[in-house]
Image (cartoon, rainbow, N blue to C red; front, top):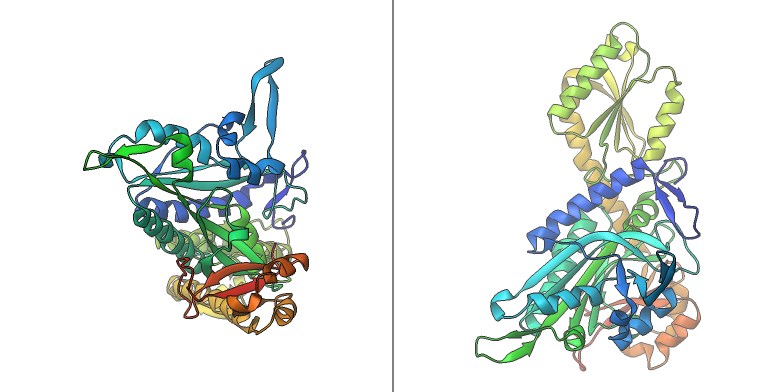
Length: 449
């Protein structure tokens, strides 16, 4: 993170400064996710950072779940506040306060909003991009007329927004499933999750989507008049993903040379590196960069010949730029340039006239190769087991997969005591379990960040 200039620790414990290159990657994540969120029908909005403490206390499970992590402001403007205010840990309570004003009739439903913002949770053991006291995220909140509509929407966000982004942009395969009751979001009826495996075999929760039922609606009196004239409580969802996705990028694809950024995500897909500025190589390099940009490639020209070529090459490797095109007088004399893939360090000579076409093909190849590599790693480290003892062993370096019935009543608690957890539940066929009492499920167990 330091050498690639992504982020560094802030002055207050648990905070972080995201540097321009790191923020450029985050902006690409935002753009890709936001487009999918809007395609799902949610509109952008913004709600206050400060929430009256009484709002959180209205939903008992919610405040109990967040109480140890709350940052509370008691003084402002040089005097003690009449009521303490909480720095936003999540926004269910304040958003529901306004939903109760905005929703009056069935004609107002469904209502779906999403905000990009910062939140504060006082972490005991902070780590940049994984668990920080302040972090960036998006949080979506919706109201629906029926439980089924709310569930369908929560699952749509889970699959069409989150899983699609993670697989097709971030190139990280994810286990999509339901959280156990013990792992459920505070105040939710059901929590859904996407779980990725990092290159060290640990799991990372990458996003969540929650069915809130009518819990918050009853507390905040969020009701609507149905077509039959009856006043009914709405059914709700909330869902979010955060700068933890930056951690997934680093740990899901990084190698000993630095980052490896999937082309679909990379703010710079190709860097054209001028080796030496002689015999018009500088002009040819600039022209090539312009040609790539005109073809829709996100490209950067590195013509800093006052810095050694080797140092610059290492810098771009650290930053994970998918393709490096090296333009030097020797290669140009033969009508060629050198093309280097970041994912496998493969170098090849390419005719100058064919660079744009070659780069376009390479970007697709690299995107597919990174996903295939991550999928292979996950599958190799997923072991089917029959007992909790076997799950403890296999889950320490990957995913242990076992029938939920084999866990027994105390199995989850025993896993937690040993530092492992059930990351998600799926049906035996890989589908999403809907939570029926007699539904057969399999559990994926792992150590997690």
